[in-house]
Length: 239
Image 1: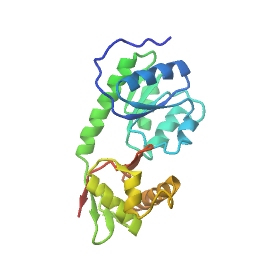
Image 2: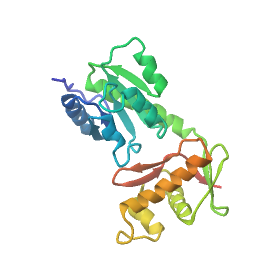
Image 3: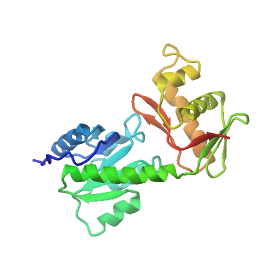
């Protein structure tokens, strides 16, 4: 049985967290502990389950084991790091002399060795998230040139935009870092639920992401919020 400390020293965790671990008892109690502190937690017992999710890269934070069915934990870290800069905490009982170096090199932010108290996990998540938010606030601005119909990446790369791309990015510009609902994006695109499925909007977002990825090596800050909408997770300003 995993012990749950009777402590409220940790603050709120208003994050969408992916918990990837094949120990059902551990994940049940840890997920509940994090939910009690305000987190929304999706549990995946297999790394392949996460990668098969409709939006595997859309979580705010990832808590991973290393010994997983499917893709090995260290490889999963590398896969995630190609598509997201979200916080990534490894909590594992794997015993190896170089395990810490391995996970940090792969792209994890922090490593905790099992057995671990749930409060320690929550505190580690908060510490990593504070660092990410401080770094995010200092990142170079993306610019939207509405007249030229281009998105300008921090490295100066210019992304030519379609009518749909420009309309969506104008929504994100107005939202100033807040989540834009799917309904708002549909309205801006002149679509209705009767004429546009969720997959249709997802495909439009996907094409924009791919267009940005082809133009610049910079991490694409356009991310989904499961069942809510999308957010541009970097400063976006009018050129």
